[in-house]
Image (cartoon, rainbow, N blue to C red; front, side):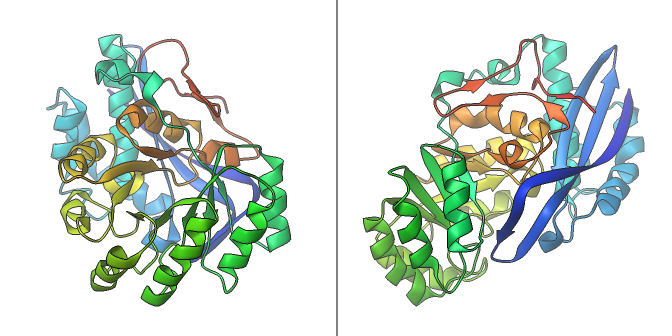
Length: 337
């Protein structure tokens, strides 16, 4: 088996701003596994908020390379367990490897990933399209640029309600709002009432990630469902979210890949919580990986490649009413640069 790492720059159509960061381009790491004439691709983007860089992802992967190449694993799940300790401080790197392993493994089985998992692609929920923070005028222009049935609106400004009011004048689409930890308890409770009247479906991560006491109060009084993001990074966080959130948004890169995400989804469902998987502005490689497990979900946020001005890969095609999967087995992603 051979393994390759490749860093790429993903240019965005518009500067993407959320409550705690802003960027005009996104660095990403692509991992390729090759064996017996087949290849598997996986991806993880960098993230300054979590201290993740191309350099430290590659360092973690290099540290794991000897174990990987020993070949003492026969499935992606076994490989993930072998890397659990090595990647404890860098689940982003483990995610890229895990996706590549699933791609290669299911190609060997001659099946698409969703087929191997026994999932029905007709059950994939419609992804939202994200509107990053900007001036009200520019946010409205971004919304009008892409006609979509569901929008996620990034908030965390001193004019959050005004933003949603103005956006609502431009569309009858469903809204979801994401404060990325920017609100107080009082703001979250107060805002929820008007946001409900403005056609918002749910609020994502209103408070700082560790403020579970505050979230318990918001949970008790909010007029809208609450979805955890920053508060639900790894498998051990799922149970902590029960009674504080109505659902969880799993990011493959934060969790460490498809393998732990499947367990997190199952656990959340057993606790009566809604499930969502979100993206981190990946190319079509990472987005294709999400699409294959999307039939398991109540909500999905896999618009990352749609936000790029140039995608270095091709894979699934996202439409308002369906997802188009490439022919052939595996995840179906391919680098074109």
